[in-house]
Image 1 (tube, helix red, strand yellow):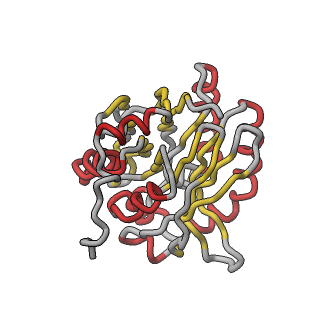
Image 2 (cartoon, rainbow, N blue to C red; image 1 turned 90 degrees about the vertical axis):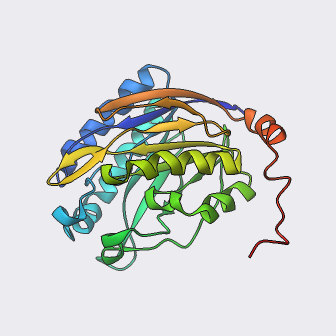
Length: 266
């Protein structure tokens, strides 16, 4: 098993509703990151439609359904071409037209769709447009065990702890986080990393449009909660090398997990 991964946090920019343009921007950033050696490419929440429910309203679902198949096909092919895993967060249709999930798809480096995680905790207007997911589980990759949560999910310690108990060594969190709550963004990812002693990477959208400022500042932290790579608000990408074998050493140094007292917790 390969344990070191070159992960690219990608802030592709774009504009809500301009799906083709948003996809092209994302592909360009994926290619640029892969040229630098990235083998694990991570995009932000609803990157192809853009995230702005007040502006797009139900068009978010309509566009997401219309573009689902082509987005899957293009990013599956891109993952195979670049020989890189891709976290691809988009609207995922269900068997009922107009009923959709806010999901993060994971393609492996052969272009195979490994899994799809649907956001479990819906924020504000999201509950009017999406169904909540009902499954949180670890995913085996050639780098180790990873987990996916989306944006608001990271504020619920139980979700991250569930993944930790399932052996996750790296938690990836695509997001569309607004600037008013930047303090929570800065705290949540670091705290989930420290209390679970695993790597956490948050990939936030960089898109300021019609009163909604999604401020970027994607970052990665180690199992001590220390920030080891961080972006600003600009469109672009940044690579960070993660060695998942370090998780064991962190857990020995700070034995939160070993010293837990589940018999006391309610």
